[in-house]
Image 1 (cartoon, rainbow, N blue to C red):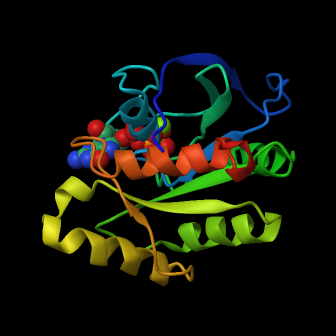
Image 2 (cartoon, rainbow, N blue to C red; image 1 turned 180 degrees about the vertical axis):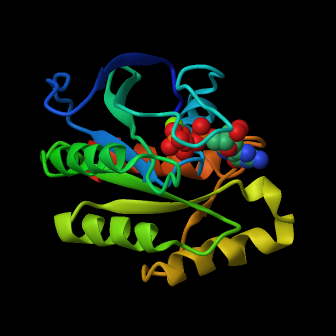
Length: 199
Ligand SMILES: Nc1nc2c(ncn2[C@@H]2O[C@H](COP(=O)(O)OP(=O)(O)OP(=O)(O)O)[C@@H](O)[C@H]2O)c(=O)[nH]1
Ligand SMILES: [Mg+2]
């Protein structure tokens, strides 16, 4: 079954200690290192260029941004990690913000993004460790698939997952070409409309 994104709107940005928006039954949070393509993925999924702010310079997203899709569920854009130029105080703030959010019990699913071309970093492993520790269901997504030849993508996406210590499967995704978009929409459908709700 196909999910259609009929509407997508920005709800609010949250920092440390901010009040978070009214809960919805499903909240999908997007994590990954700076510049991996989190905000771009939201835009391409929603078919909107400027819904989430993107930049060629890492460290663009600094707050937790909530987007409500189909008036039904949240996609949440998070600030990235591993931004080398970020001052220590900024990195500590990031840690507190993420910990506060991920332990809130609100997150029903995590999309963890990894660059299809690169081996996972120590921080990627740490992030993946948090996801397992908190026991939150997740999907691995290998971004920027357009940077590799079509024949190499599947293998590279799976290899990235394996190197992270996860079962060896990641969705190969490109915000530029829309590769992997259908698969991701189907997966979102399965998350927000679990089996018992289907006829
Ligand atoms: N070729 C290609 N470039 C991409 C893709 N996704 C994102 N980019 C580029 O990568 C850069 C970073 O994208 P963002 O979406 O801002 O990355 P982010 O993960 O939100 O980064 P932070 O907010 O800093 O954590 C931008 O220049 C995007 O145009 C993709 O699928 N293919
Ligand atoms: Mg961003």
